[in-house]
Image (tube, rainbow, N blue to C red; front, top):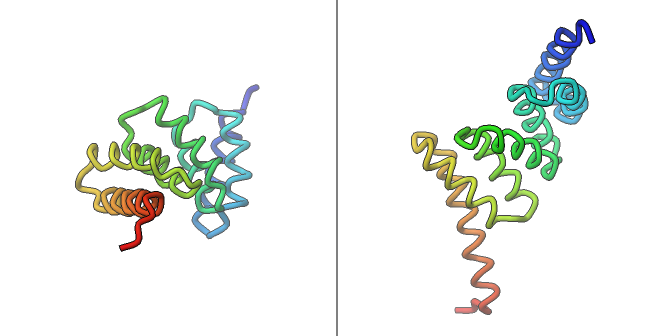
Length: 135
């Protein structure tokens, strides 16, 4: 597979360009090919996960972010991305776990804490609804 590294890099660059131009679905398609060629590449997986998320492919984005988290549990951005993607798939409980980890690892990133507060508010609201939460 001579030259596949260069080909993968070109796919990666093209995917980032598409993502930057506001074409996340097209970027995801290109980056899926790069990820298939270089499944262990953190940068390719992150770009793919971002593209999938921006394209509304939240379950796929969660899986891509999960692969990064499994390889590097202390990656705060991957924890954050996984949390956001899980929230969008309708799993705020799991989302809160990953967002809490991200916020604890990097407390200077206010958007991590903001996302965690939002997911926790969703969890509280759901709990109130289950209780018959009429005041």
